[in-house]
Picture 1 (tube, helix red, strand yellow):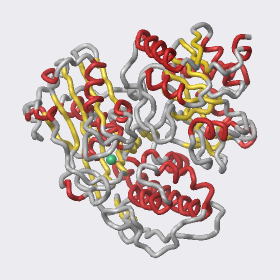
Picture 2 (picture 1 turned 135 degrees about the horizontal axis):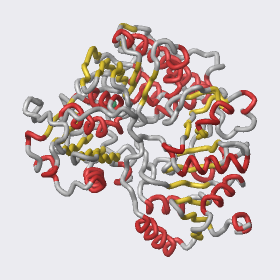
Picture 3 (picture 1 turned 90 degrees about the vertical axis):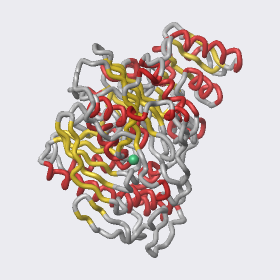
Picture 4 (picture 1 turned 45 degrees about the horizontal axis):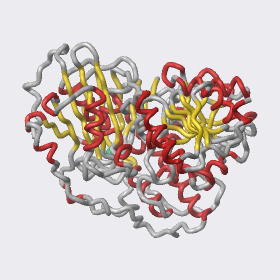
Length: 555
Ligand SMILES: [Fe+2]
């Protein structure tokens, strides 16, 4: 495989097509294709799990490659100029349950060797966040599990199309510590979000469980005296958390340590002299820690950007952006890239999916007129309404295009949603989506939060009004909406605000526990049909379960 880019054309107007991919033995495989025909640039990005329906899929991204190629109009592999993927230097370093050989797929054998570029995993995280940020200069922190060379934390600096590695460490970092404590609590890796949700319940429990070694040194936060190398086991003597209180205390302690470590790293990254900071790697999804950086160090950075695909779901995106901007030397984008880059579906696709499922399930009615007003009215009446619109969002969190919505005002709505559809642990909070221009009325926030990657406090006087989205510590993982970015979802929240005086909706991912977020219209209608979701707003249609009293929406 070729790492030499000396023969690459610097002609900016030259058409260019690149394919980025993330394949086994990593988790969260997927594909991204960017096609620039010399006039217009099209981009499609999709995680394999959305199509193969295996949560955090490790399958070769065959389905997502085909879907992305089709979306941007690439008919065959010969049209692709560069294929970029990450690598593991030594496949044997993984000692955990996910160890297995890379599959050398037929697809890669059909690509000319000189077109294939293997690139460091952390560099691809850096490309994903920086080239989608709209910045033209930034410090980039990658805080991750492990990368291609077993590195855990890396610092890059970027200017224009250049991204330069300044420092990296392979000492056990905060990402692996967080995974180890999550494992100690009784969950598996990739369930760190549960630990973050549980943490506030441990704040007032006066029973210290762990003594984390505070060995911060530059880019290194070294927990190798605490965690076993190559596993998610804790080697320090401690009482294993068993009761809810002990588990909550464990979650609180690791969350507090994560906040300290990230703040240290953000301060350290200032040595670059940059006034903008990008954060990526799985720890970038820790919205509580991200917010600590924002609150405590406003003078450090003018802006902080975290991409919604900060975890390994973003590697194909970073790989394609590496091909486009670094290999292809295409100019960087002055604005953040849209997170809605999944395949699009035509009205005919949607009508066909409705018709076939209507025949199969015969359990819902389909209405085309006033679908929008009906959805708002059902939400006001505390029904559960799913929303499907446009192209799917990247990353693990629903940003409105594949979401389940509910009124944030009903005291019992959180439990009702958990009991009837989501079946999540009751301590996990649901997130609010608010009109950006109204955010300040309800939440203590003075910046936009389009990707739910910063938490903030619900204003004290509004907490009793918004019980379904206010976490036990008064916080909320907020998403702010604009018409330009969120289209019809913005309109729906606005309509709900007109009807109720509260332009806020509870927004959770459109899936059931253990399944990936729905992707296609057929996935969405099947999920709606097989669960206790009351209605599905799908583009211009609204599907409503037959058992709902029609008087509610026909008046
Ligand atoms: Fe990673």
